[in-house]
Image (cartoon, rainbow, N blue to C red):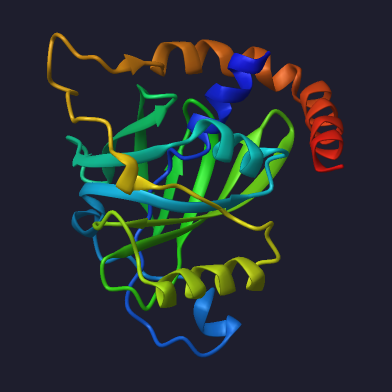
Length: 229
């Protein structure tokens, strides 16, 4: 069961986004959806900075297991499709998950390893990425907000803006990763990759996980209460 929790912690980071520059003035501005002109602005390598999600125990699990993470988006053959490659470092080891994203009407959709839809939000950070997403696990819908950047770190002001967005959306306090501690190498094309590919495990595991989500949610809530005492 613990490995299932780790897999979901990895999966919770696997949907990407982009934001456009905007002044920081109010919640109305900060959570305003962004119109995506095309998938080109989503392509390339992005580094994960922070995430807030309503998935039970996600902040605790990210703090325990998530050292750093990055993702690379490549254009797929279909004009509205993106090949998404996500890599996360945990306990000094690297794990990857591959998925396909579809861009329709300024919304990113993902069907596997779980169903999710992401709406891009405004940000005053020129090279940052912000996504408000809704994820369906079993029969339960969770929401979350992610901050990504081309850089390994963001300024204090940029962090404060993200924290304000989290507050405006009434989400839990975010977990911050530390890319300065080192990122996994990009060995996606190497036949001797040291990165463990979890894609098949994720797809096989999610059907079982969905049916046991209720028990897992209850167990995580109990664990968090015990740890917080």
